[in-house]
Length: 304
Image 1 (cartoon, helix red, strand yellow):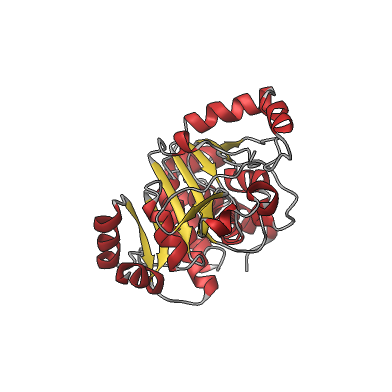
Image 2 (image 1 turned 135 degrees about the vertical axis):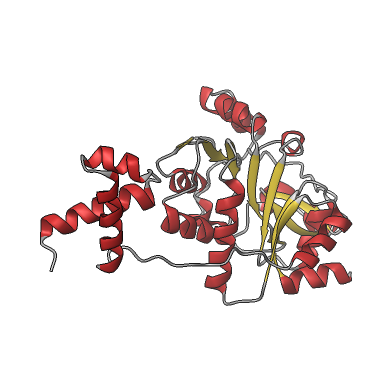
């Protein structure tokens, strides 16, 4: 039976090795013991149940369906997930994104219910996105209470201990051009604009239209979304089934400009709940480069 001191030593060694990624020699140097002693401590930690090692095959998804989507829509990558209960889909999505985003220096975030749930899974699994660099909102803040729409908090959640999170002070939906101009004249917005222009990866959620919560669409577009037959949105940019973006006379939204978004090398869209109409319209915009989607939706899109 291990005493408290012995247990604490095993936990410390295991954290340094498995969580912090130190080599056994580096762990030995920190603990003041030999490298062979560290090896024995890690083995003891496994035997004592302090460390549980789980072997999971990589999530490959349906490669054939993904290739068909890439050929038809010019995608660069993504994953087609097999049908599964929602929590399993979220876990697989989180695992895929953790690998896909790990080496990206400047990551911009959108918002959405599903994106919020995936971010929580990523944070729970590894404490946030691994790697170094910045992570920040691509759209302003909103009063929508769901965690997935508190995009500044999502950035902090995913930043973990290795990345730097940026807090955007501007509201997503100013009520007038004067209010928008005032927000865009601040040093905080100037910094956000610089970040947007240096984004290496953008993560957004595809939403069907209409959807809940509503993103101030009546104020921003009046009846334009209905007249032009909107089918979906991402980053609160609305589009029709032909992939044409819809403008509104009072749309003063603060978010990354489309001209900057189209220059981002990797724009990843989470499309687990949007449906085939929204996904098809989004792919036709030409903005999306990587897609996370279920097998059922992928097949429906390819059949249209």
